[in-house]
Image 1 (cartoon, helix red, strand yellow):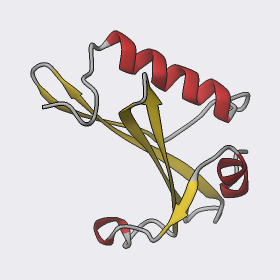
Image 2 (tube, helix red, strand yellow):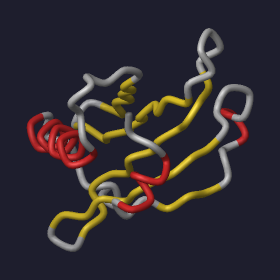
Image 3 (tube, helix red, strand yellow):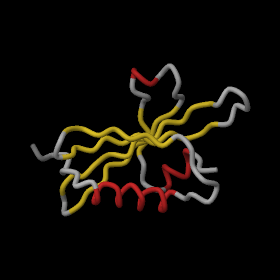
Image 4 (spheres, helix red, strand yellow):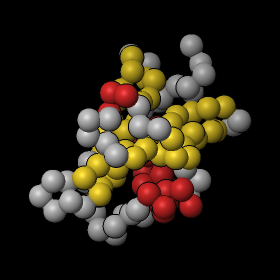
Length: 106
C-alpha cells in the first residue's frame, strides 16, 4: 500500500488538511505539475481512516479546467500493483487527452 511517506519521497508537499476535508481526512499532501514551465494541475492526496479496519488509505483529488468548465475527479481505490509513477502517468494522460487548459490560463 502507498503511504504518505512514499508521496513525500516522490516530491509531494505535506500541508494542513483544508477545512472542508477535516471531518474525514487526517493528512494531506499536494504536488503541482508543470508542462512547458506553466502550471498544469495539482494532485491533491488526502489520507483517511477506513473505520472497519482502521487502515489509512489515500484519496486522490484533481481539478482540471476544460473548454466547457471545471472538471473534478477523485480516485478512492487503487489496484494493488499501483505505484506513484503509474498514478502520475495516468493522471497526466488524462490531462492531455481531455484537452485541459493550463491552471494559469483564463
